[in-house]
Image: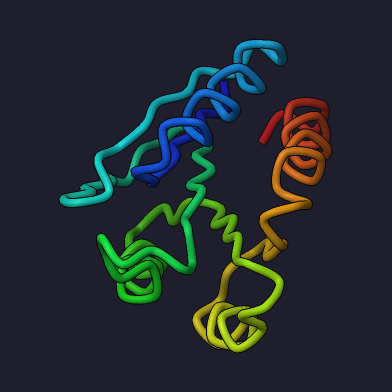
Length: 119
């Protein structure tokens, strides 16, 4: 069963993401942005990172996650006025990169497709 992990200090966003995951019956959790630690697992994992966060370095975290034996799918989001973050995320190897406005709708699509494919 796929799992969703969100790394953000935004309480409203945490609530939205947890509700979306719950509505799709996807196990989900939130890691504190101040000290996020994501471990590699055998089950499919999707990690949502705030590309504009000042609480942690999402790009360094993405590099470290991609180096794990079973790397998670990385889903980054950014404010549309900060397009340089999208370019940085592409260079690091994020699987999905969307604007803040697109976050819940695109994540919904990805999670539904992910569940259908079984990965």
